[in-house]
Length: 227
Image 1 (cartoon, helix red, strand yellow):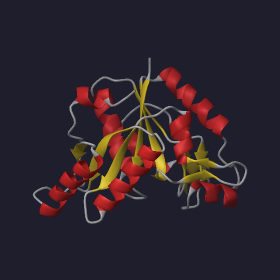
Image 2 (tube, rainbow, N blue to C red):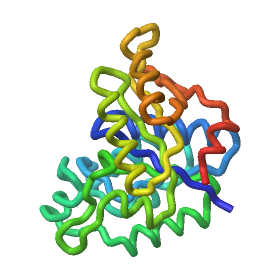
Image 3 (cartoon, one colour):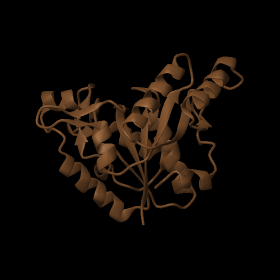
């Protein structure tokens, strides 16, 4: 039976994709049948033939070396570097929940551990015109538990606590926090870790430095996060 975990962030560019790649790598190198999925990706570039390349999926694939095809990782790929709801308004092909659920089920049939990455922060709108779909709707429809990725630096206490409080208010289970851009032996970052744990009741599962090649989480602990 497959297990899954959702990676959300306190905002855009906190390193969700990088952390997702390290997590998938850890699972794959430990012998797990691991896969990656993201419902919608914006801000992608085209190859020499004009085809859009799902950049986040490619990053995860390059970090983890999983054999999963890029095409199976994301059903909605947009060029515009804006929220998916606006990108689809500009480019067409709006997100449909039935497509998301179907493509996710296909992944679940073939893989045991599926790491799902969100777009932006938890409040990111995925579709607005044809249907009203928020990222949290995807989390609920796919029955996912989450971890929160946050920048280790200044301002993260506010970002982490607000994200955790919002998710709690919407009955979105959160398993813990991962700090990215961790420098070590930094009094502010250490205090951020303590305060975020104290104010949310969530454990900081790992602190990941810039250019880290692995994530420092025991494999058994990591797999226990997946449900």
